[in-house]
Image (cartoon, rainbow, N blue to C red; front, side, top):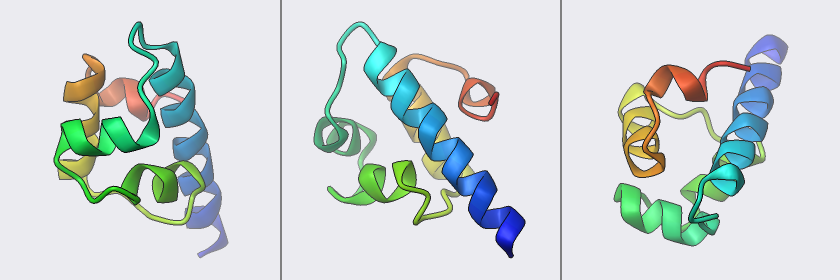
Length: 74
């Protein structure tokens, strides 16, 4: 279980880095809205509190105009 928490934290840090590096520099709230997610989802993922599904990863990548593997490359 501890490995899963560390993995989620690394994923979250990478998501935050990519969200802020994006030309739009989207807020967590805007990324959630654009991806069709609950308003708190991106914050929970970025803090490593939530383990995103592959569907969520795909939706986030689409909004950020990235390939889903880019979100997993950390």
